[in-house]
Every structure is written in C-alpha cells, then in structure tokens.
Image (cartoon, rainbow, N blue to C red; front, side, top):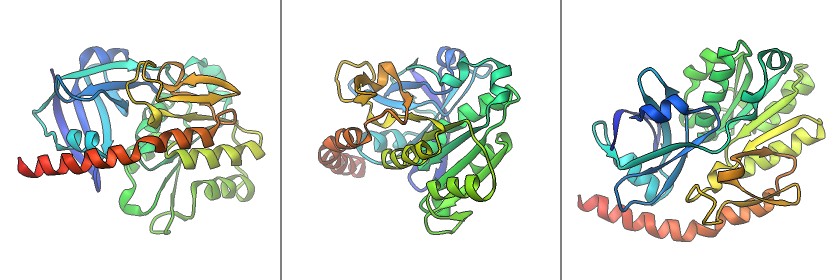
Length: 286
C-alpha cells in the first residue's frame, strides 16, 4: 500500500499528490512514468512523474479530472492509499544521457501545455541541478488553469507564459509565442521539448521543423496499460510502429504521425465518458 501524504488543489479539477514510494523515488528519472491502481480490482492508470524526493521517499503526481479513472484518483485524500504504485517505467529523457559539458552548450526550450507542465517540471529541475538552466513556455486557456508557475520560475532560466485569452502573459498560442521569441526577440534554440495536448505538440513540431530545430515530444497520453501488451499506444514514428510505453514515452516530434496518434487517442472518448457518468453516480451515493 502506498500512502498519500499530501494533496493540493493546483487549479480547477487538477490535483497534486505526494505519495510514499521509497523505491520508486530512489530510481526515478525525469521523463519516466508509473502505473497506479486505486484498489486490487482497479484499472491500471499510467501517470507521468512530476517530481521525486529520494530522501523523503516520496513521488509527486499531478492528475486532472477528465474521466472516471482520474475522478477516482482525485477523490482520494491525504491518508488514503494506492493499492499499487509501479515504476519507474519507460525511458528517461534523452537529455539525461548528455554529459554536463554537452548540456552547457545546448540552448534548450521546453513548451508545456496545460497539464504538460507537470512532466516538464522534473526535466527542467534536473537540468538546473546540472547548472544547465532552460527556457520554458507554459501555455493554458486562461490564467486560472496555469499550474506550478512559482516552482517553474525558481528553476528555469526564463519563464514565459501564454494564455489563449490574454489573461496572463502573452496573448495567443504557445507556437505564436515561440515565433515571437525567435523572430522578434532573437532567441536561439538547439532543442525544443514539447509536452501537452496532442494537437499542441503536433503544431509545435510543425513550427519547429520550419526552423530546423530538433524537437522531442512525449506521447504519454496515449498509454493505457503501460506494458505494450494492449497495443492502444501504438504510434508510427519515422514510418515504423512504436509502442509509447516501452519505446517511449518520448520521441522525435518531426517523425511522429500525429494524425494517426490523434485518431487513436479519440477511439475511447465515448466509452470513457460513459464510465465517468457512472463514476459520478457512485461517488454521489457515497
């Protein structure tokens, strides 16, 4: 059993939890994910690691209510337990494979959309510990949906905020802010790491390709069982079939077939909506 020692509301329907999982905390690296189950009969739910503290033995996850499974997780409170908390899984960020000397030569930009800020955070934090701070763009529909701003500002070289409605920072899409930074403010980048909604990553990759900037994307939202056996996270990368959970979750954004990934992601929406309605009824009764 894995105890929830902290629960915090970050924004509407978005919760942060610190969970006691010493072995996971000691082994975790930025870019990896884990599989959680609420109870012994519960669904296996893949979640990207937001942070980890080996000394305290805790792992941080951030969950947004978007369906039945995430609603059940967010209904848990401090003192409650997960039946299983398995990880770390997947390959760590390729940035962790670079030596300090090479990292210091790279100008790195992270682009985080919405909940994607959570998995971006441990990568930026890791880089800061290597004295290789990166620029970060965080985007959301409005200021009320921005998360982890203070935490990100403390570790990023520069933090840029974009909101669709202009309620905070730059008014417009993250791709528009990226163009502004490069074309008008003279910023130069060697690597872009984009994590967020699939459609956002698609257009970030299309934009950076026109600038010939290497781009890494995380396809964690495609995963279901996290072992490669269900096949739900199949994606075509460079004309070859890959499984997000065992080959990723990060891939070269310029090689990903995003149209295929978007179709695959939409396959289960109606089923998940029905399950969420049933979940709401059960939670109301309790």
